[in-house]
Image: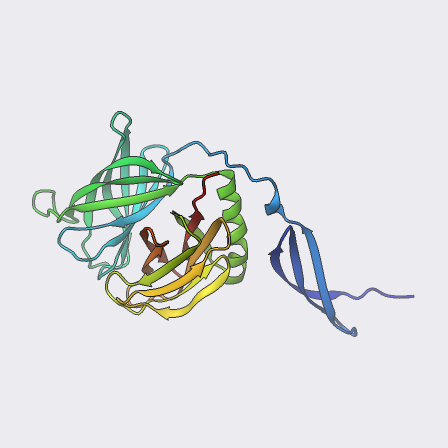
Length: 311
């Protein structure tokens, strides 16, 4: 009587056309090893709707912050909740590392102004660094597939008062993608394989629209050069491997093969000032769009690059 073998199987997920595949090898005691391939209809090939989800203030807004007395910028992020509270995250392109602040916010619908007021520092990577406690008035507008908040900020250095410790003011620019069912499905489709292989979460922070498929992607360190090493993935393909960024812009010409394309910044080495914060630009020959992305060894920043088309 034949006895079934207990098999040990290692499978790799892939998405090919209309099918999802699990392919790999198997082995069993006292049996000749072999290959195995399993498929099913892709869950991501269902009808994708462009119906937009209702706009909400809650969630992540990402971008950058400038200061009038400095020649470099800061990665800046807001996480707003539904009860007019939230937190901000700032990453210095020079000394200081990063910090998280608690904040409160309000919105004036009459003039489309969001007001934020940082209250206190929750935590920071450099205990000796003094951060600015900031307030800002940001104008809301929509531009294509993204909502934009832009305006001015002012503040005072922690441990002081607004009178005795005034910071040099600056500007804030933040974005949040317009979310559709298509966006959600594409985000899941392009994140699952990367997250499985690299064991890191992906956060799509920005949406960039281009008019041509042939674009030039550039990467550089817009702040202090501290030894950051990065790898770039475009739609799962490695287009830049273990590059040590500097002040010099490295250009990578690429041809976009899809309407929606995902660029992931994968940190290989965080350098002397973690996390890994890199300036990235996307140039379609008509317009160059610059984004500051932040990644660490647990989370990778990403951009959705969409080819603009008139149906």
